[in-house]
Each structure stands twice: as structure tokens, then as C-alpha cells.
Length: 233
Image 1 (cartoon, rainbow, N blue to C red):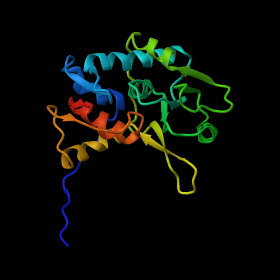
Image 2: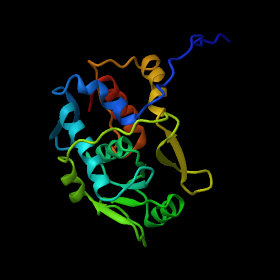
Image 3: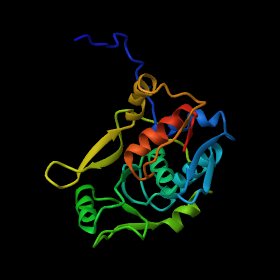
């Protein structure tokens, strides 16, 4: 069997790095270009430019800190298939908070299990989704999140690329969701995949049919194209 492999050394991740800053950097140069089109089942389209998206993310980051959250605090995301999901995910990471996305289909029992594992400082809650049976921390609803978008843009929390950026849950091998930690450099590692798997370019429009609150959509459908200045559909 013949194998193909790369013999050259990959470019190392910068010593000071922030996942969100990296994802939004390409869009800063093309602020009026469409970053995202959310196409609903009725044919309606919600459009976001890179400028609007960046403002919403960095404003929300400032707002989360103003609510008393501190860097390294963990935030459980119980958000549905709306723009709130990628905005708050990237907002949290931009200022050193640790977002923890969760499947919309989770039951209250699964939410309780996650809360017991990660001890979140806050839960971002779409009230149409299951929440915890008992929780003493801060619960932030979508109405509050929407008001944060227009706040002054945050400064990025730059640091060691190996530090924790976010946590996702797998289905687990024993029937219980398992928490998996991801470093800021996880987005840097996707560069090889974007080049060698699908040769993603800034002129591309990438359609992904998954829900925004699915981590596969988040990576392949949103973060990859935005990192290149491409449009996500």
C-alpha cells in the first residue's frame, strides 16, 4: 500500500493567541462582506456582515463580563438553533470565559449531569429547551443576550495557545455524556484540514445543513469559512 504524507514542518501556533481573534481576523479586512446567511425552511434569509457579526461578538463579550463573569468561568450553553449560539460561543472565548455547548435535545437529567461535572458559573438558556432541575448560579436568557451585542467591543484575551478555550460533550461510551476539553490552538490545527480536504478559499460560499448548536456545524460550517473570510450558509 502506498501512503502519502507531509514531510515539511507545520507552521507553529503563535505564542500569544486567541481563538476568536483568529476566526474574526480575515473578516476585519472585508467588513461589509456577508459572513453568514441563515436560510430558514420558509425561504427567509437572515444576513450578517462581518462587521455586524464582530460587533455582536465583541459587544456580547463585554456584556458577559459586566454581568460578573470572570476569565476561566465555565458557561453552559443551552441555546437553540439561532444566531445567539455562535455569537455567545465566540464572545465567551474572546475574553477567556469557557463556553460549554450542549445538544438542544438534552433532557433535564442530562443537563443536571453536565452541571454536576463542570460546575458552570452561568447557564445561557433558551427557555424552550430543558434546563437544570436545581441550580444556584446565574441564568441568562436570550432577551438579555440580545441587549449585550451593542456594548463597547471587548479587548481580546491573548495568551498561551495551549490554555483551555471550550468544552464539548460527547455521547460517551457508557451512556453518559463525557466532557472533552479543547485548547485555543484547536482552530489553528484546522488549517491543514481546510487546505488539504476541501481547499477552502475566501470566495467560497459554504453550505452546512446542520443546526447552529451542533459542534460539527460550528467548526466546519462557521469557524472554518470565517477564518478564511468566506461566507457561511
